[in-house]
Length: 403
Image 1 (cartoon, rainbow, N blue to C red):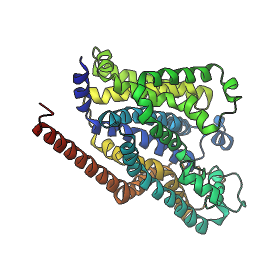
Image 2 (tube, rainbow, N blue to C red):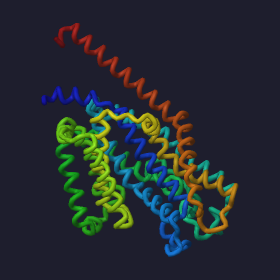
Image 3 (cartoon, helix red, strand yellow):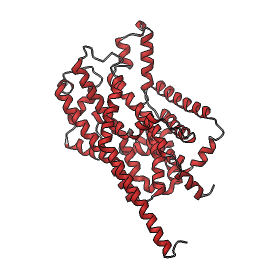
Image 4 (cartoon, rainbow, N blue to C red):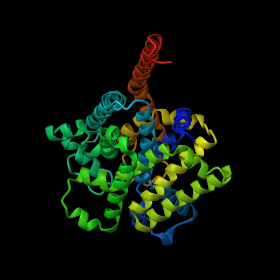
């Protein structure tokens, strides 16, 4: 296939379909955090309810809770999608300045509103439940997050949050945005030499994978270390899938829809198996997550699969990701107003489930107020840019510089 044919094929990629994958990833993360923050679960459940006393419902409840333990792994799926999407964005316009302008408009206004939202939830819940923040409570699983919010207005914390070096508390999930932004800053230059970028990134990942202790002993600043040696490789995978789009699809051309779907299921099962075995996310589960990301891209694009309700969530997946954690604590605050738990943990399995709908609703409202407007501005800029290119070509054609 010629270069021109390859570029034409990539231009025809129906990128709206990828919203379904964003919907899957963001919804999973929201569900995982709702369950993890609102229901006791895990080892604490075993302490309060010994397994010898379990009935069938306890087994079902505990087993289903295990299905929500892959929040970080699904962030890796986001990284793969980002690499794929940014490669496409820079393929059409390699200007670093224009790329930064588009990215800033796309992500920063919503980011600022999410920071303000976290601060507002802090103010509201501190008024309702000062015991969350004054150290008078013990044993509640959510206390580390609430106590960290006491420093939210410190000048150093505010500066770090504004510069994508987020604190924890109600913006704990923002950790991944740091690496997204580092990738955005470097992408216009790294993607000019994709092969070199991929080779060096693979070498850095492999060295850290084999001898992590020696790499950590170098004393590399944490953000730089984590990006270069841990997370960058997953952006690279997305970039390579885009750059070799037609070849990747040829690899899967002999597989039926059910066979590709089976591979998706196997990769998901591998993620669970690895995570449960190590009891925490590891590079092994991240690799399986990257495989899932690739398979989802292939599966949805190969079969032009559009799932309307997932695509709708995917459209505001960014807002959902950066607002849901604070919204969970607002939901928890409302719950405590209605029924303050007598035990150290919320043991009612159904309490956390309505929180998913609650955070989706809050995110949708904020999407309409902010993110949707920034998307409209970007669409207008793209339209104006295309019109200028067409006009310039027309002028050149009239002067005989283009045949």
